[in-house]
Image 1 (cartoon, rainbow, N blue to C red):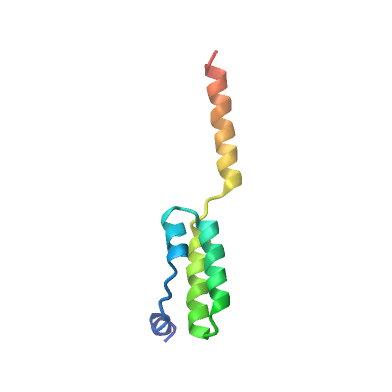
Image 2 (cartoon, rainbow, N blue to C red; image 1 turned 180 degrees about the vertical axis):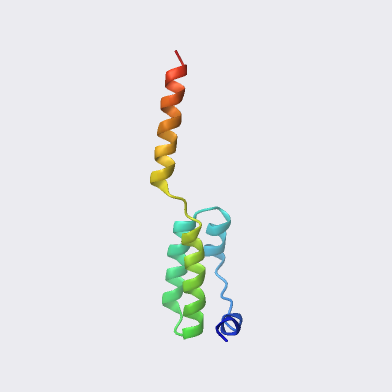
Length: 82
């Protein structure tokens, strides 16, 4: 029953948020979806927007892990640059 309910949710379009997603700017897109969320009163629309925002946030990488990986790579390069 719940899966059927999800299929009935409206699809909301926002060109700016979709463009940010296509550009890989997921934090900014999630922020934009939140602004769109504030403009809608419908419970179904808000539920759809929450799910879309969660999709964006799930695509965001871990900046601390990326930083640690780059640091290890730079140290390894420095050792062999001699």
